[in-house]
Image (tube, rainbow, N blue to C red; front, side, top):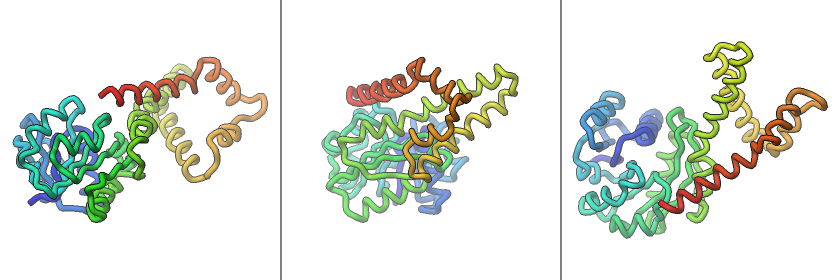
Length: 263
């Protein structure tokens, strides 16, 4: 029997598979993934050497099954999959909006887990929120956390914080990419080659994030340290504030929480 199964093999499933294999948690032959198209599973097999199938029932036989389809497909996929789970299957959701209670009721399983990873998992820098259902054993929880930590960092949180965590880490990379693109556009406007501009902007974001994590200082204090009196940075900060930068970011994350709660 396979140790890890994936119902769906999109971007996030592939990021998880890559992390698991890179850390040697299981061998490729201990992973199976299903998808709707032959092209998708062929690509996964060629890239990772894992077992693949067009039959969700086969992937359901794994010890830990990741439900890696879009939220709007959850109900139909679980209805199809439920008869093929064993009572000991650990079902892991990676989509917003579906509670542990919903997952348990829909699947008939006691062992359910909610994750909210983000796309930087693809480069081993994911930030994943984890909610472990009460039906899981300590061994189940340890296995899930070992898998999650293979592609970045994780924190266990109470379920009522899942939507907030999804906004802060799950959705926010998209907004950071937009900021990097805008920063690079400004550099290009001033004559810098496009590829170089992306490198400068992206590395600045990487470094700033690392400063927050490793220095222990408040982000506001780190911002102040860059702003010399009468200098260029404080002028940029003034312009961002005038354009509602912080308010826009806050409102964007609140909007993602509202959307998650409607799913």
